[in-house]
Each structure stands twice: as C-alpha cells, then as structure tokens.
Image (cartoon, rainbow over all chains, first blue to last red; front, side, top):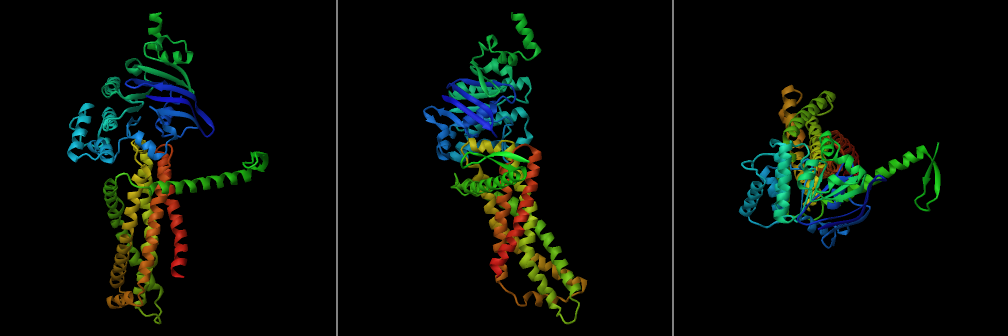
Length: 251
Length: 273
C-alpha cells in the first residue's frame, strides 16, 4: 500500500500539485487520470522520488519514503518497477541485456539463473525470439512489453506505469492494459497507472483518482465514474462525441 | 529603472537597478551551476554498487573514448608534426642556426604543447560532444530516471567509467601523438629536402629534458578530467528535447576548450616555473 498525504509540488514558484492525499491499494490497479499537463506525471514522479516534494508525505507501507536518504530509498526502490512513457530502454543494450540489467546489478544469482529469469519475464510479456534485438529494432508495443519485462524482473511490490499505452494502436493498448492488470493480480503488486485513455479507465480502473490543474477532484472506481457529479471529470470523460452519444442514449 | 528586491538577510525590500538585478541573477546562476557541478562529482565518486559492472563499463569506454580516438589523433599529429617541421625550416633559413634545430623545434612543440593541449582541444570536440550527447539523450528519454528508479547511482554508473577510461587512456594518446608527430616531421622534412635524416634525428635527441614528457602527461590527465566532467555535467542536467541535447553538446565543447586553455596557462606556470 502507498499513501500520499498533503503532497505539494511546484516548479519555479508555480504550484503544480496542491494538497494531494490518496491511498493506493495493494493488489489493485490504481489509476491517475486527467488531461495532459494536469500534473499526473509530476505526481507519479513525486511518489517514486524522482521529484523532491515541497511538503507532504509519501508512505510505502510503514516507511516514510520522502524523508529517507539515498541508501534508504535504494532499499524501497529495489521493490519498485517502472514503465516510462517512452519505455526508457537502454539504447546500447539488447532486449536480453535490458531485462538482465537489474538482475546483474542487484542479485548474486548465477548467469544461468539470471538468463532463465530473463527468458521467463520476456515470455510472460509475449516477447519471443527477440533477445538479441536492440530497442531501435522494436515496435512501440514491443518496447513497452520489454520495459514491463524489465520492470518485473526483480518481482517488484510496486509497479508504476506512466501512460503505458500512449502512441499505441487500440488493440496493442488493450493488450498492454490487460498485461498490467494480470501482473498486478498475479504478483499482488500495488500498481499505479497514469493515463488519459478512457478505454484503460473502463478496462482496468479498480481505483481511480482524477486530477485537474494539480488538484485531486474526484476519487472512485470504473463503475461510478460515469455517474459522477464532478463537472471537470464529466468534461474529461465525455470529451469525445462517441461518449457524449452514449450518455445521451443511456439517459 | 528600479526594481523592488527582497533582502534575504533582514527581509526588507530594497530598490536596485535592473542592471544590478541582472548581474545578481547571473552571479547566482554561476554559483548554482558551480555548486551543482561539485555535487555531481561527489555523486560520481561515491562507492559503486557492483564493481564488476563498473569494470565492464570501463572496458567499454576504453574502446569508445580511447581506442576510437587513436585514428584522429594519429592523423592530426602526423600533419601537425609535418607542418611544424616545414614552418621551422622556412623561418630559420639563416645559416647561423644549425639545421638540427628544426628537429629540436618539432620535438619540443609536439611534447610541450601539441600532444597535450592541442590534442586535448581536439578530444574536447570528439569525446566531449559524444559524452554530453550520450548522457543528454539518456536524460531526455528518461533512461537516467529508469536507472534512478532501480536504485542505481546514475551519475556514478554513467560518468565514473568514462572518467577512468579517459584519465588512463588519454596519456597513451598523448604518447602516440608525440611519436607520430615527430615521425610526421621527419617524413616531411626529409621528403621536402629541408633537413637531412641525420640532422633531424640528432635534433630530436639534442638537449632532451625527460621532465617535459612528465609535464605533458600531467597536463593531459588534468585536461582529461576537465573534458569528461564538464561534458558529463552538461549532458546530465539537460532539460527538454533534442534541441537542448545539441546545445548541451556545443556547450560541453566550448566550456571544456576554454577551461583547457585556462588550465594550460596555470599548469605551465606551476610545473615549469
């Protein structure tokens, strides 16, 4: 479980996140949704410690993460996996070396055991016969899946995904969403996904928070998002014409 | 024109001109960057997570930053040696000057300045821009964030192997530059007929001071540190996209070159006085 209490973050004096408090539950796919520029990525990066926060608390179980030093954070980070918007695979390493990297860095397993684990992770995300390819030789969807394989290589307790299906076609996006949900349940992880894709919201949104202009406006799940009284959320959810028509039909 | 400005010490508002404000901001920016540079170095020199991984990285950097620079250093040294010899010959045609001074001039120019300073300026262009653009691209594509999330000290992992590789390999490049430069001078001098082979070889042996080699190697080590650390700093703190990576790469070359020239003067005064 990850708890965020009264988190504030600003850049050059401009508030980007204001007084955010939320609890992300274990074994569930927690979604942070909002328009582009609403502060989703800043919130996610503040939670994982890539951004220093001005005030507030970030708790991983019973550990106050944002007050830890580098060594303390390192211990928690060994239990984190993160999928970045652009995949962030290491360009100079092959697919196999990318997934092997955290195992090489943080385990003392034998080379055979590590390769076995790499192949297991790659198979789990449906990447087969691509071990020796470089990231530049992969499609967008494959890159995301390799990044997921790297993120789960060390059996993390916490999985963070920053817009996992941005730039992907709808079918691949659904596959990535399904994969994230499956892995979350399989390994009982606390998963936090940043997205503005309504399809993801309706597919995997077990817990959802909506952010607008750095303020948490709404919290709920995929079942009650369509019946919310929050005006800004409704503007977001029913932004496209198909959603507007569906709402008209359902009314 | 006056600007209201809060005094940091007592909190009172004081009025200063826009020009003074600009000067203050520039000074603050310089001090911030200076401090950030040393904090980065502190991170770079912290204990490596897994030495064996760093060892492999260092070997890789030996190839990319060291071995791959031999070609350009060899070509430029050869032609510089040749030009120095011909220039010396054509500018000392007075019969008072013995011919072997041409060889001596070539040797000392190569050892004292070319092999360390000029070669360092060339490497600032080749290696410095490569380091800044590699690390900068990793920054803007979130690869550095990915390392940090895994709990890896990204500064140390990315910069320390490059620093070790250049600190160890650049002195070798300097020695190669000296040898090939003098060889180029000998070839050019004898082929152009401005000096005989015997005179040239006598000249390069005449009044040889071994300390000059040490002086050159000491300068090379300093310059290698400047090239790697300044370029890595520029790349590591890039914000934005490909345009900013390009700018960082240019800044890396310019700042490294200026610092090399500045430290050349300082080190020469310290080491040769």
